[in-house]
Image 1 (tube, protein in one colour):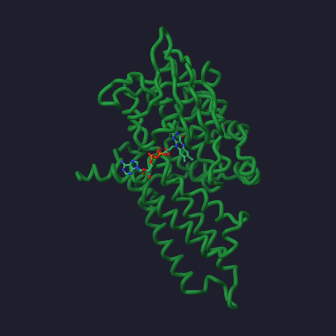
Image 2 (spheres, protein in one colour):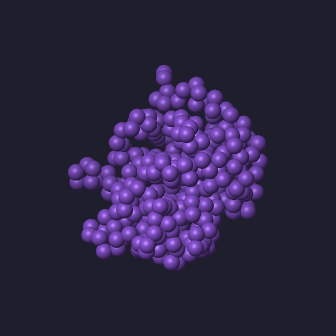
Image 3 (cartoon, protein in one colour):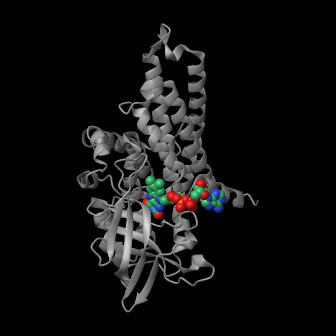
Amino acid sequence: MKHPYLTDDHQMFRQALRKFLDKEAYPHFDQWEKDRMIPREFWTKMGEQGFLCPDVEEAYGGSGVDWGFSVVINEELEKVGTSMIGIGLHNDVVVPYLTAFATKEQKERWLPKCVTGETITALAMTEPGTGSDLANIRTTAIKDGDHYVLNGQKTFITNGIHSDLVVVACKTDPKAEPKHKGVSLIVVERGMEGFSRGRKLDKVGLHSQDTAELIFEDCRVPKENLLGEEGKGFLYMMDKLQQERLLVAIGAQVAAEDMLQTTIDYVKSRKAFGQPVSKFQNTQFKLVEMATEIEMGRTFLDQLIARHMAGEDVVTEVSMAKWKLTEMAKDTASSCMQLHGGYGYMEEYKIARRYRDIPVSAIYAGTNEIMKTIIAKNMGL
Ligand SMILES: Cc1cc2nc3c(=O)[nH]c(=O)nc-3n(C[C@H](O)[C@H](O)[C@H](O)COP(=O)(O)OP(=O)(O)OC[C@H]3O[C@@H](n4cnc5c(N)ncnc54)[C@H](O)[C@@H]3O)c2cc1C
């Protein structure tokens, strides 16, 4: 049967990427987790091989290929570890803001280095006082001659330490009613006066992912760095969240598939009461239940990716996939750890890291509760 979106070209690309990751990522990943940082050189190596932003137009240094190639990249990076999510965020969340809303001049200035990995990007929406309720952000950007002057603080920002270019959600009109109409997106670049990094945050999981606070104190940004139109920032964010949430759903699905396979291998080799743990009926039923949920998740996800690539509005279905697949992956992590017995709780077993890494997928890119409010609204409730 024909795959909903993958062709032979995607599969060849996957082989090349796997070969690259076998050499450049897998042997180093445990050390990166200990160092709590993925080195910048890994980004530029990805860029050299064409594994960053492959869907960016050729005129700006990309390959101009379909989003299926990005899906392949996200799947293969997730297999290495969820901490690689920052690369997917750059490729498929932040850079798409530039390709969609930047002017030709801005694209020429920013995009080529995003493709080579010389520029790493971040998206700064969340603040210490507000995450889910984005219309209530407090960071302001007030016009002063040819500049915007930014004041405020952002937190939990993925790629926060490495980022050279940050798309910042801020209020250009703090008094606007309704509040979301005062939100704009402004691009802040490394080295701009008044822009500094706060703490690199110490997280339960995703250890090598650099998540940080960003601080803007009378930060002067040239008005040429406004993205799109003033007051449209909230609408732009809503537009781009479909792909961001799909990305999280893809990560959760791949993580669940990986945990299932790891656990099948383990229970076949581990013996108790004179037989492999895989021969106990409880083990079999647990694995069968997980395999069934995972198979259904894969079918739902693949057709959603195809519909997203076809340009359909699948906000409701993507919200469903985001909450359901991340909860499924969390349940899978818990059951798989149990089937590993005491070894599952040891850091040298991969399931321990997966167990730590997966819960955040239910929180970021909009919490699962927020997903349900979107679905409820779209169901007319
Ligand atoms: C590792 C990590 C990386 C992140 N990366 C980024 C990033 O790169 N850029 C960025 O901008 N943000 C990022 N975030 C922030 C993330 O998107 C927010 O944490 C998330 O949106 C939730 O916001 P909050 O933490 O303020 O929780 P809150 O909004 O305070 O929510 C607290 C609880 O209340 C619930 N809740 C809130 N509103 C409702 C409602 N209307 N109905 C029902 N329940 C509700 C929530 O679901 C949650 O359970 C990241 C977070 C983490 C942990």
